[in-house]
Image (cartoon, rainbow, N blue to C red; front, side):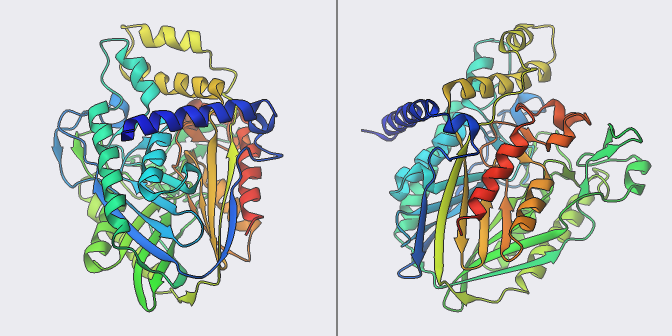
Amino acid sequence: MDRREFLEATSAALGAGALAAAGTGALSLGIEQPLAAASEASSAGNLHLAPFRFDVTPPLGHSCCGGWIKPVEAVDDPLEAIGFVLLGAGKPIVLCVVDWTGLLNEAHLKWRETLAAAAGTTVDRVTVHCVHQHNAPFACLEAERIVLAQGDLPHIVELDFYNRCLDAGHAAVTEALRHAQPVTHIAHGEAKVDKVAGNRRILGPDGKVVSQRGSASRNPEHQKLPEGLIDPMLKTVAFYNGSEKIAACHYYACHPMSYYGDGRVSADFCGLARRQRQEEEPQCTHLYFNGCGGNIGAGKYNDGSKEMRPVLTQRIYDGIVGSEATLRPEPIANLRWVTHDILPPPHPRFDEAEIMKQIEDSSQSVVNRNRPSYTVAYIRRYREQLPITLAALHINDTSMLHLPSESFVEYQLGAQQASPERFVACAAYGDGGPWYIPTAEAYPQGGYAASVAWCDPQIDQILTDGIRQLLAQT
């Protein structure tokens, strides 16, 4: 059986299992009982860590951000997928983060399946996240099938390129396992990032969204307004072999774009800051995870000029270095990996037949045809009962949470408040199927994020309860 046959067989088996579980009612609720919770406690023993990285830069002409902004014309700096395999705590655990806009639904699952196959583990022990740069691919295989059927729309993601990335990931993990090194200690730290994040949603006197600050803004009123609700802290979780730092995971909640839409591929300011730190510490693998930044952007401080990209890069870099300055390694005493499956229902306002009419209407703009294909993809996913997996890696008093999509910052702050005795670092932008995940209160406030949130507002309670389930199993 070759790799693609393996993936097809695994997808079919997982889908059959999800359908069977749906009959119990556990999956559709996603609250009372996880569909496929997996937990394993382990004392520190013969732990090893195998870092990997591989190139995921799209070719010239490839769509950026789902095909509704300018396609790739040049590459200012490459895009990477970076991660590690943690060995010695039961079946291997894989963490990976990708310099793409998003991986959604089946496209996200196939990445996890590929890395699981290479690492010799199961798909429930693999988490994959995106940094969410916009001059980058935005992969959803069902959306690609929908737009291809129209015959006159740009690709969502080119399948040959997508499959080459899977092959590169399989090869990178396989090679990394040959060079795994012991991991004995863990440390966490944090530092405030100055003048980057601000809440994007600006409310009027009636409590409704009157403006969005976005990733960049030249509106003086946007810049005068306060930052609003954000998480100002950049958090780091680092792994050590004795006194040597061998991997560092950095977390900050903010849309990572200084400017985009010009067809020039870039890891942008968050990726560039990560790369700068990597060059300084080549012996340590640095990973950057976007936190719950669905309603957070740099528009208060960023006017979208080219001159601001290095400024924002320096501010994130300073946050990384500042958080690492507070690291105090301690021996790994215990470790637990836990998962919780959810499947929030689509919002009832979305009607698949009506959306397909819009997609098929050649008089509509590309964005008004390509973007709704992601809505239909989630509706079909829900019908097939393919769950979204939340996960957490608990080590000593540190919890690394792995959450889906463009979750609002309230979920991150809520997770930290729910477990104040622990150091909680949140990575969002995992499975991007739901697109935005606002709070229940945000839906009636309106605004862009609420308009492109595919799920019913009950996703708030479902996700919140899922996070609590993960934190309760430390």
